[in-house]
Amino acid sequence: MESNINYRYSFKSIFAQINKKLMSYRRLFYGEPIRFIGHNNITQNSLALAGPCFIQIGIGIELTCSTIIIGALASDKSKNGLQPLTNEQASWFGSLLFLFTPLGSALSSITLGQYGHKTCMIITNVPFIVSQIMFFYANSVGILYACSILMGLSVGYSGGPSSSYIGEVCEPKLRGALMSATNVFYYVGSLLFTLIYAITLEWRLTVLIGMSIPIVTITILFLTPESPMWLLTKGEPLKAQRTLGKLRGWSSHETGSSKEFREMIAYTSTVVHGSEDIDTDEKGITSSWGQLFRPEVYRPFRLLLVYIFFANLLSGIQYGPYLVAVFTEFGAPVNVEFTLAFSVFLSMIGGIMTIFLISKLGKRFLTFSTLLICSICYILIGLIGVYWTDSKSITSWFVLILFLITTFMSSLGIMPIAWVLLTEIFPMKSRNITCSIGAAMGYLISFFMIKYYLELSNFVNFYNTFTLFGISGLFGTVYFYFYLPETENKTLQEISEFFK
Image 1 (cartoon, rainbow, N blue to C red):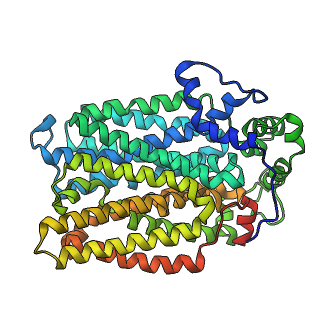
Image 2 (image 1 turned 90 degrees about the vertical axis):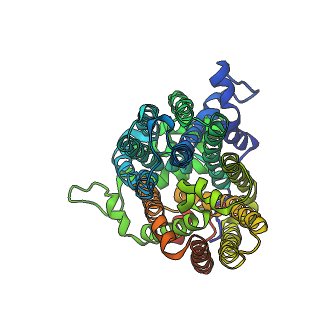
């Protein structure tokens, strides 16, 4: 799939998009506009991806809540008026979040086309704030379940708007790197949350402090520009043109004559006016749902589901809520709370490295290499745990180190790439709904993995689960060798054409 389009992006364009992350904080905390010679619109540029980044921080906190609370209740039977959760209660509490993400995604797919990315990203923070308040006052398992459901709605609702927004505002050659950079903020949120708990050892105080993140996110999103593509579908070409110019650091003359803007108009015209190859209802209105049955949609959708399955399996998503118990089972003489924080730190470092490696090595190579390494490490953990039992003081360190290697390698490749693919492999006319459904299905896969992990572990033995997952990962590597295309530095149109 060779690219036939070579956009000539200036240094200002790259600078504008990277500064979206790096420079937004000065405006937010000091109230000063950022001015550079020939670049008067940098303030809006700097905020364009800051909102999605903070949403990822919030998601990191939400997905870590169950790990912290399950571990905290297990370590102190009388703390805060709540008893340790049974295996059944822990499995429901740890997995309910993922079960209700499809509902949140369905709601976002309904509202995204009408209200736009910006408004929907603001809405997603409301159930997040409510859940943290309820956590602080929780006095029963039922309240914990309700909080998990609210966080699931929040995470699910955020998937479509934030992912499609990033895919639409980024340049083709920077899309993978910037999406990977945004994913790093998920690990930042998880790391902050685990560090706060490791220091305070008080989970109620930890969730109270974490509630500041969605409040800051809402503030940033009010200053965030809307997607130029969405503005075009709403019949606002002039506003879309100005927004794109600010995002790329171009003058208005450059924007009007740019090849990218003309391609964007052509790409979105089918959504606004319809065309012969688009499914329509009896009123002639474009049907996004009808696009799900077209090859350029269901083929990448099938690939995405397989990718998310193996990414979750080999990144240890099924162990997530039970990590405190997993580290305890390994038996290494370490502080479990800080080991948990260190594992998240490794994930963050891996995510950062992805930003620089994804454009040089490509998504295919990173997928093969990281999936293969994780599979081998899992198999070794299983074999050591089952057959090398006479030197526990040594093997406990081996299995812990191997597990931390998988944590690092999965965050370096398969996990962030899964979400990068979500933003770029679907055509424009169906992207809003497919991003939402794709994110929902990904979390639904996580629900089943987490909910039934304890039962599987009891059935086949704790260490045998690693062997089983590792062997499965080897089959996944072979599958991606034949079916995973290289999408790095390809336009959204070129990627869509590949799947037709």
